[in-house]
Length: 232
Image 1 (cartoon, rainbow, N blue to C red):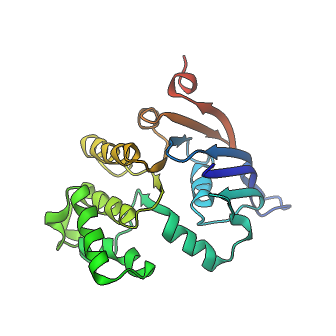
Image 2 (image 1 turned 90 degrees about the vertical axis):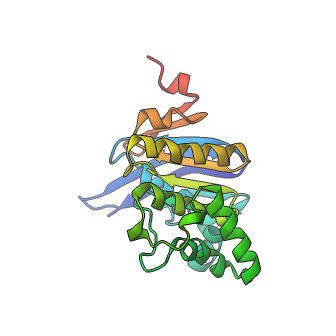
């Protein structure tokens, strides 16, 4: 089992009148090599869940094991190490560094990993070529379209060869044609063995996954194949 969360709660202002339960007892297991969409409307808890799955945040209560490691017992530094080694992130806002060109943006996490110059060069070239952006390697984010920036963001996510790709509304800022291209890249990565977790509010995007988890008010209300979740 790659991801195993049991009875996860994320509570803000606990015990106060303003208490908010962003996650209210969520349990979820994801096997290695799965493609899972997590769907829900704004306020459903899906982004909170991704932050916990991606080790960007810790739960208030509950258990989380990632590839056998108890995440809830780790320090901030250990969590950062897990993120850098295990997870590639793709965000709606791209999160590229404006003053760096495409090559430098993709290379940055490899520098954090301590890879040498030759290995970094091979990884960056491989990743940019994989998403069709090698010819734009010298361009900064401001010189690229949204779709091009998102492809660079995917290249950055996969350059470290992480076993897990987490994509939070990766098509949200893109037109439909460009969004489909981004989805095609994610699906091809899945076919090559990556575990992909896709966060979205869009039923049509969620339906491209082999498994769909629906959240509502911090609770899992459906979990299954598209035929089950979207049954009339």
